[in-house]
Image (cartoon, rainbow, N blue to C red):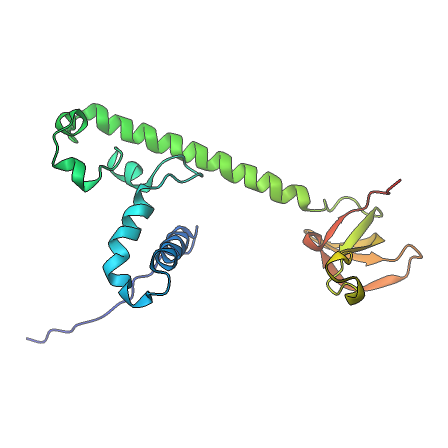
Length: 195
């Protein structure tokens, strides 16, 4: 009877980055909590995990614990003292199961609203690709060193000569001389003539 042991690594879903974001948050918590004593991370992991699971997330307005179990977490010391919340809690009650679904739906709505707000902020900085022949500034990656931190990070104005792709453009100087290479809209902004 041959038994074959196969070891497989756990593959996190890469579609939305939730696992990576959670891992990043936990690692940040460990670095903050441990300071220089990095060798003791296994002894302190439960504390960091507890903090991660019971901290309200801005995007959802809920804690991961509450979205999983339907109620807020109770610190271990409070479980030894009978309180109204603990004595009246019954996870099998249908109303509480309905409430967890409602709570999850509200968290999903808030998350969608937060994502839309971030998208609006991001898209406001993009140059729409239908502004052909308008004046723009381009990012100056190598500002003049003699001005130090006060050197301008934008230069121009330039004209949009050609739309190459979504948010990718070819520029020309005001004299219509072509500027080499293409430019991404993230490295451009609208030119507003200063008075």
